[in-house]
Length: 299
Image (cartoon, rainbow, N blue to C red):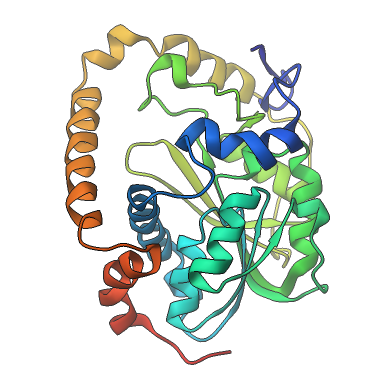
């Protein structure tokens, strides 16, 4: 796989594309990562814990009933959490097996397909979320333009992507065949601005691995002029990637801590999954404390 970087702005992408994106995500993606066409109990639990952490990031947007679109809804764990809390939730998921599971197991409203194929009325949603999907798309700009059109004028788009500056992963995992594009904060901000979306704030995960950016259609009173180039960003990213080595990484506690965390997580998942049969039962038990604290009336 060849990975290239724009010398003007620092955007990183795969060239040529390693696969036919539509066929890969419709048929092969979940199978290659999870070895299954629908989520197993351990996958449901893992995604459920991730859903809770994602909710914590956006709960200030959901203090009253909202219309929410979740793009790349997967097995439906995050969408089901929001639906259980009282929000009106729609989803988009290209993989038929996972989409059907979310519809049948949780009663979710989900369109099977890609963002470009979805049909929603303009300005339908208060909140649109796209967690670790944008980097997989063939044309992120087209996707952002569509999501903007479905967002209410005062709505918020929440985008989370891997951070190309991250050094928490092994060097050989910096670039991934399924990630067609790689962003840092400034390149993501610039792409969003090009398509009429403006940063409200962003978060960096504790390990530096992920960027969560909150975007609005509303143009700020004071902002810099749009310029396609980002001086110095190419050099900055290139230097980080070159300096990220296995030797440097293994001189820090991070790889050993992550290995221990994975082991503990696996044991916990086995223990929790042993008590319940279906995904809904697993998530209802996991989400119960949040539902008691944060439930709202239906929109």
